[in-house]
Length: 163
Image (cartoon, rainbow, N blue to C red; front, side, top):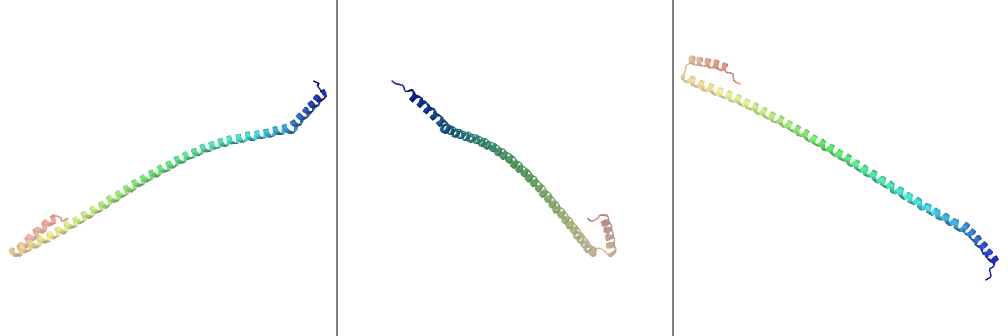
């Protein structure tokens, strides 16, 4: 076994040159590409995480806005309900007042008609009494007696007022 030092040395030099060339022209660019790819992946993951965080923030804000909108809607509905109840109460009170006024007017009209009927009845009754008295007096009494009775009746009528 013969060892050829020259060949070993030549192979060591060749191997060193090959390592140097591979390292300079192949290994470093591959490492650079791998680093760039790792950086892109890392940036992509960070962007995804930021996107997820941003989406969660937006969801929270959206829920908060929805809750506030619902509260506002409930407040508006409650306010409208209260105004409607107040309006209903006011309308009922106005209707009740108008009904009372109508009833009072109807009652006043009925009383006025009753008084007018009483006056008419008293006038007719008085006329009937006078006519009957005249007829009786003309048939049974003389002019002097009739005058005395009429004067007494007129005096009594003056004392009692006809309403």
